[in-house]
Image (cartoon, rainbow, N blue to C red; front, side, top):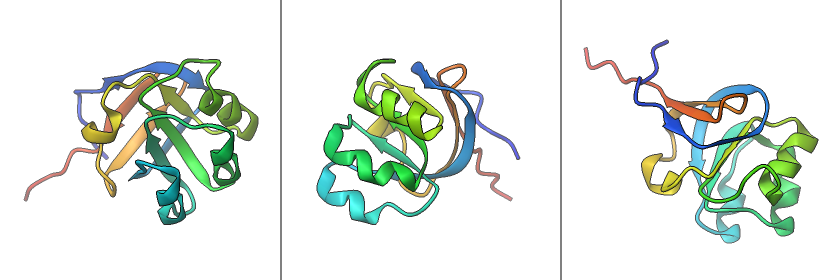
Length: 115
């Protein structure tokens, strides 16, 4: 499987790597669309979002650092997370295959081979 060399960098917020499908969520009202083991991509999270972390495979947020809500809860649930990815909700699209590398704070997009 090939991944785009134009990796997107952020802050390493929770260790581990996860390969999965992206789900861009703009608001808490859209959380019901999140499916098990998807990569949650959002601007930021707060305590009201905590209940969905049990089904999240990876987390990418536009804001925050290692002490942000999303980062702390991701570490508790052992979910790889990358925070401070500027423009994440527009860079990534729901349905894309990504790798979240919470060790290095990098997100990789799967390359689509046009045969």
